[in-house]
Image (cartoon, rainbow, N blue to C red; front, top):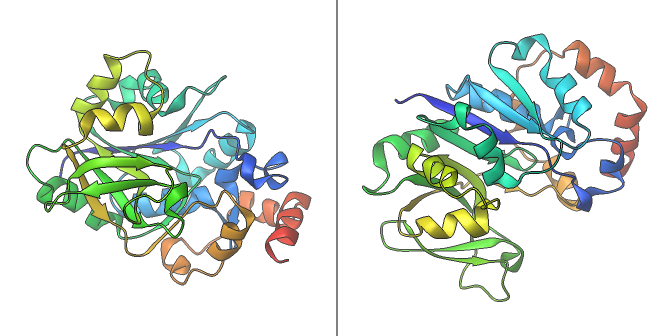
Length: 265
């Protein structure tokens, strides 16, 4: 299998999770007894990805403090954005990291449980010829709030419906992608492009393969969805068992107690 790096997007403001995100970044919200970002790092490492870059902006000191734990040394790094660049802008800023390799691009403030090894294998061994990225999909319970994909018989995207009323289906973009270098080269050649969903993806319609996540994908941007994530069944299989000093400190903090009060209501 080709070398794969991961770019995890964790810079967002998380405005829909206020007031929780007034004090704590969305990507570190606890799912049971672990921060969301820890699940991402563990599941990607178990899938063989050991070169990961996390972008930060809002409450960056907390995210960077988490990443500096000894268990992440040498394979997880962070890059700070003084102002939000958009996904395409983040790729351009970090082109030295992204170019020439397959890149797993994901919004690390979403809650995603699935077999990432199968996702990687599909992209490298099974995706249709001529496609330059694989997009993870899921069944969205509220299709008008998601980017809905229309596929052909080979599972290739032929049209997007981005947050429209009454879209033709429920198969949604999970905002988890595997990108070949052709995609990052296109982004570098279009310096004014910032938004991945509305400006980059339409350029590759007909060349985007899809892989269906039949397990769990949640946008935990609302407290109700964050509560639901606490009850998902296969959480325990995604983590190393031992707590770190950072985790022990977090569990005894006022921030954790405040967040827990909302989740447990």
